[in-house]
Image 1 (cartoon, one colour):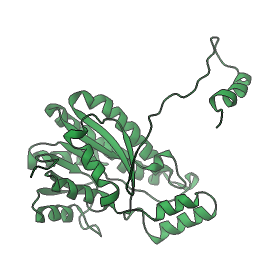
Image 2 (cartoon, rainbow, N blue to C red; image 1 turned 30 degrees about the vertical axis):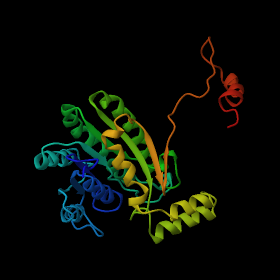
Image 3 (cartoon, rainbow, N blue to C red; image 1 turned 180 degrees about the vertical axis):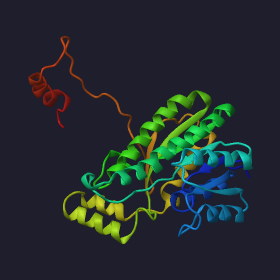
Image 4 (cartoon, one colour; image 1 turned 90 degrees about the vertical axis):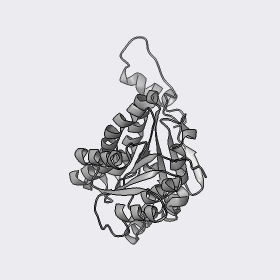
Length: 296
């Protein structure tokens, strides 16, 4: 029986548990050979080795790699692991990331910012940098980055919001640069139950934010009643890595329960023009609300 990803080789970062693990297992069932990854061996709840073993036990092929992809050299070693073990690389799923600590921007430390942005955004760039050369040579590749609905903003998680918004920009840039080589780059934002999105401390904080009017009741329920990774995210990611998705490039998706959505492209919506420059502040005071921000 043919599978959608027969003979493909995939590197999936952050695949010791949660969404990454589910993606790795699903792709393996579709015929892909997998390099699993997370930072540390023996992580509670599962690591790259336990996911790889699960794939091998079901008849698939997988090798684990431990290392932090926010380190440029380590990311190269991860990509090279695919070549050394399977002879090529076809698919890269940048799933590694952290939510970080909840703090308003005035309480967010430089360390908090760097840790979140480095793992999510820089880590994605590092892996893409090292993978893109291989994919260009074979003129085929699929890159999937992980963003979030919080790319549009959120309370108490400014580093996370910034990193996830940056991933959308990175996705679009890579799509432009690599599309001519038969390589697509898309991103998706899963709303799903993982160790980062659950827990008594997180739910208590969300409840307090709801009571203080910082988030709506609907947002509170959405964040505290999430689906399992296998239902929320995995099928879309696997689909975007197939030959059938060759014409989908530079797009941003969201997956929530059984709903798959696509985000609209950013575009200039309205404008005001003046032949003689510059605008005066008085003119902008009048025209920005009346024209640019009408119905704002």
